[in-house]
Image 1 (cartoon, rainbow, N blue to C red):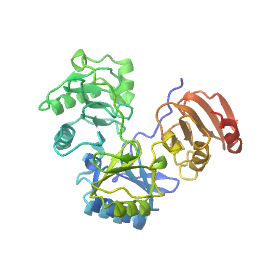
Image 2: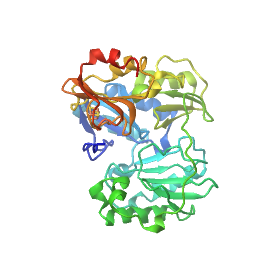
Image 3: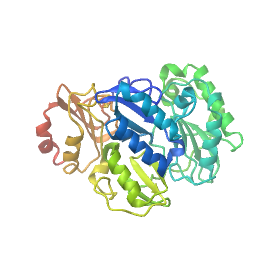
Image 4: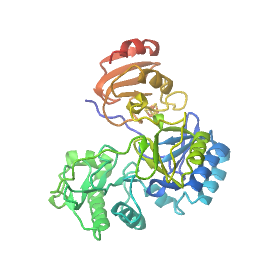
Length: 378
Ligand code: SF4
């Protein structure tokens, strides 16, 4: 297996937008993965007024507005601020890399821990920008497959643990001491040179974890919600995480939802809403598009020489396996293995079987037009 190529070391937060092939990308990190209906509709308006109207739902349950220009950036930031979607302090905005168990309820442990953590963000040491914290304190972890470096989870008998990503076990903590223990673990990471590795799991490959941070395993993982009814309201899948703001505004209105929850498995939950028919979102958990990941590719990303999402839609109907179509070896859409990974290079695709985008290919230089036939039996 080859090492993953260097991915840009910072994320495009609202205060530090990132240039892409279709303009600037501005990322909004909804607190507790929730926007009120008013905030969500306002975000849709802002995406249409100041960007291309395309909003990405990222694998960390954030929302990215695309196609922003140098001239439209300031009015966009002003609108997002007026909607209450930004932190007053850009430094804290940058630190708020949190992933939460998306079915949290008012005052449950995930809600309480997240709010306690938000109040203490300034006490964390400076961490590499890609690092994140999962507050996954429901009855069983549901975020184990999603990117995070520090994980709050529960054991099978309901105790709370803090587990560094990459370690099979963590330390039991009380709710009262949980945030202090997280800050201690974060200091251990920085003081032992973790910034060089950039992520906790990579750091642990070379650095022994002190025994105090280990010892207790989490409950077996459970799954995230899928399209269909949930305890909060109807859930809809988002193919490739790409949302059209007009379609989202229509869905919010049609369901009568009071709030929107975002889930890292490319899912929107319409809190308090009634189910509504929609051609724009995935309503069937068995839809083949739920098995497919694809990054924006060309012309949106300058690193890509190939179109990705149209091809992924076509191949989704033909390939019965999990499929990842990546514009290049960085594998932004899916930082894990897939049964089949197609990786753009020089206008053609390399084919990786049971691997990640950066792994050694099984076949190389495949023209896009021969892929439906090549993969029809995969
Ligand atoms: S994986 Fe896709 S989005 Fe990421 S850098 Fe490569 S082409 Fe761009």
